[in-house]
Length: 258
Image (cartoon, rainbow, N blue to C red; front, side):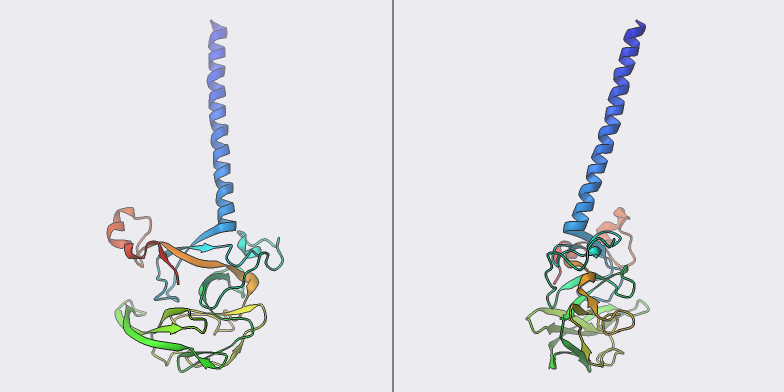
């Protein structure tokens, strides 16, 4: 009888050990798949600032394709120096919205629109973007409703801007054409670098500020913004599921980013 009980106990123990080992195996496999997807295919980001209003809003969650521009060390979590330059490289196109590592520290994630390509000359004159000496076409549309620095509702000047390659997108000018960065020097984009700007032209720290951002090396690009997969009102908590019926911006779900 004792042998039967010991044998039975042993079988139960084996099943438990096998169950734990199988669970660990599944967890490890899931983590490896997540790392591969995040490194090779897509990485999620959320928008914490309003520099790309009206295209992207605070509280938007989006997927960035890692394969769009090829891979560099910054495609890998924590940016280990395992790659030099880029492999399978494909240069960003004018008008893309892209995530990159801030050149100042090579670690902070920034997201802006690609405006200037290598060799371009970029200038802003009385609020109008100029590329290689030519004013970029912009058309005024209905004022954009947003909030000011104190959270009060306000309407601001709103344009549709069309870049030389035909990419059309919306911009806003909170201060009309009198903002700090509405009249700039001529910027000459160096080889293998890009000039990035926000769509919220008077509230964007971007390549116009050479001390803070400046020209962005191609190596620093993480990927191209593709689609908004979730969006919640500014100040609301994404974890407060019970508030979703009135805090989630349902009309922005699965919206392609242009």
